[in-house]
Length: 77
Image (cartoon, rainbow, N blue to C red):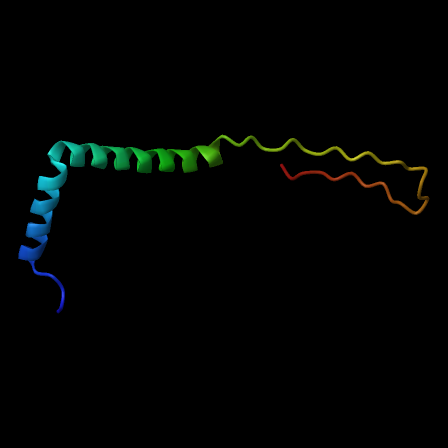
């Protein structure tokens, strides 16, 4: 009652080939491979195709709060 031997797996493979036929199994394999490839391409495309969001512009109304300090942020070059 342990794992199946190689002969058990060969018999199962033979029965599957006899039931479905080699052409149907080949089509099934190519369909499965195409689905996996499409999934991988979709995962890559989802990350690459995103455009970065435009920087947000902040408008300041200086007249509302007299304690606000006006500071300009600069980026390092």
